[in-house]
Image (cartoon, rainbow, N blue to C red; front, side, top):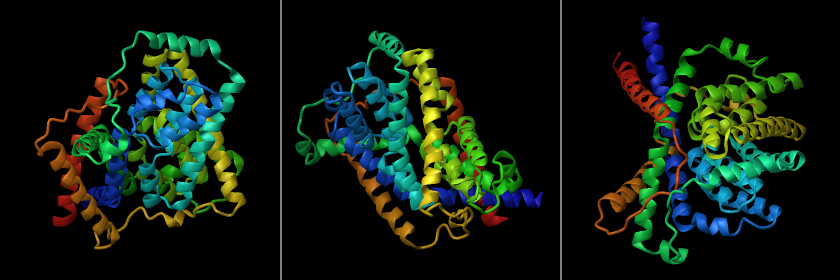
Length: 408
């Protein structure tokens, strides 16, 4: 019993420590995301993406890069862009870029996994788009694309701020920053459940799950080596998305779990496949089916799953060729000094102060500004309820665990 209580306390402390390490990065990322979404409108994106396919893919990638990392926001934006004239491949480029090439995700990855995974994330995001483009060109599913457009014709789009005010005027006005603060709050509202559950699970797995489990799930893992056979790597990149599918946690919440997998000896390719899998989980499959129909939804799943397997394996061997494969020992899963006075402490203090300013602007400063966030993908009420109660249970678990840690 004492052993279980000690592990409980350690699990809660590890979860809290993970979140403390990443807090400033979350704030920075969502402030940047809020600024971009207020100062660069979706209407402006749509106007430039309906022409040449190659240009559309490049623009889709660029606009995705400066867009939100929330999968549900990305799904809705990609659908809207496709509905208003962008090519299917351009909308897919936008979707992949907005979930894999965004700034805030790279910052979180650098904290937990190191520079190799940041390079892998961005290089892999570009490669994912290239492979999806190639697969679409080879398969050429014209009838499927036409059918998907027909399914969208009668669907109503959500509203967003489409004011024609120049971005320079927006960025210098109080009204613009009030909208940024409200968008920032909405970003947190979108992800708080995923982040809570993801970080809590990471702490629980770190404290309770033995290495033998990972050795069974991922062949030849746990050896502290980067020397895997091709078939072992292939197994890792297939099992990685399966693990992500079962957790169905967003990309930001999955990064501590990815660090945990790598620290337990899973291959670089397997961990990258796990990170890339946020668009092949069941909620995304269901949402795409609502938008485009089940045939197109399954086709998109095939495209993304095939591309992420090819991308992860390519990255692994490319890094190996240049002797740049990361060492699992560089990832420290349990650190007894998460809350020491260091650069993380000072950065968190600075960005918490910025959060306080944004809260004041958005909710306490008297203003006539009204703001409604752009369209979001339709979420399952049941799934959202499950995640909400799971997050509340996580808070209770963490509170009791921290009390055990410090007062037992």
